[in-house]
Image (tube, rainbow, N blue to C red; front, side, top):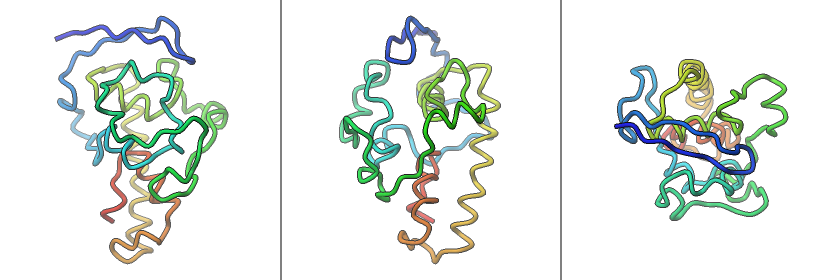
Length: 166
């Protein structure tokens, strides 16, 4: 199976990539996200403003029930707190790869869809490193105390860790 996806949105024009794996399957052995992109969008991530101009790239059902708004609003986030750095900061820190100018979540959505590429190893390492925040919540909060470390819990949702279960 090899399908071509052509992207035309505000950040990419005539960018194309290939889906070489079945959606949601055949992930790297070190990559075990707890949430799908659809689940993340339904819970409320990135202030509801993450992918508004690229809906055509992804399955329509991902956006059924998704918490999305025209202007970023942290109140649509699951924990109703802003846990995101601005894109300019991501760029300054060198976290952005040219094929995914929106960052990790865009990479994850495309990886989930079946794209595999040169940046996979780096992104999976970044995802694995984020587990330190899960450990901090576990060490400093009572089990399932969702009021404890809300910003860290929201950030974990942004990285496909289900912080509601910690």
